[in-house]
Length: 142
Image 1 (cartoon, one colour):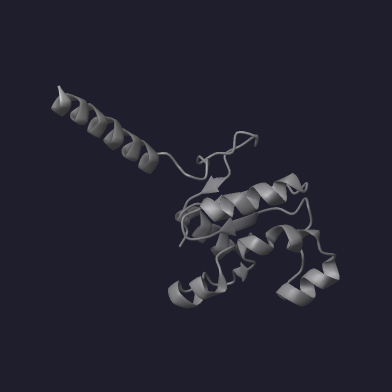
Image 2 (spheres, rainbow, N blue to C red):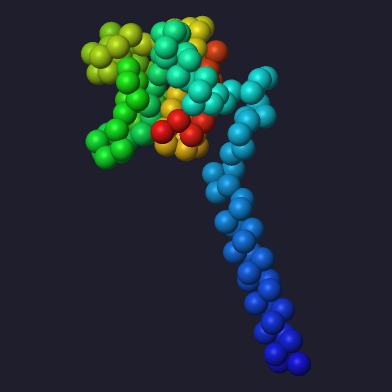
């Protein structure tokens, strides 16, 4: 009976580990259900938008990640930890710190990117909660 009990506990443990691995630890899905529309775009769509110059691209990775892995051309780096503060700055302070114009709340095609899309989705949600519209997440863009 002891072996059967140990086997059952082993199965429970394996199930728990597998469940933990396959459930997203950040609680995100590819869609924020508080949003009215799908916000993710593919790398192909991102390239098309870049070719047309039809976006403002904000990379939310840390600066050392940009050095290590490279950066997307014309993307501006605002690390995720600075997003909330950055978008609360006045236009002049934002321009001085990040060297580009602060996007307007209604600006078209404000795109967030990171390595996998999780941090950029968090940034998107923060900015959306501040009243920004027309936001997009470049899912798995780098």
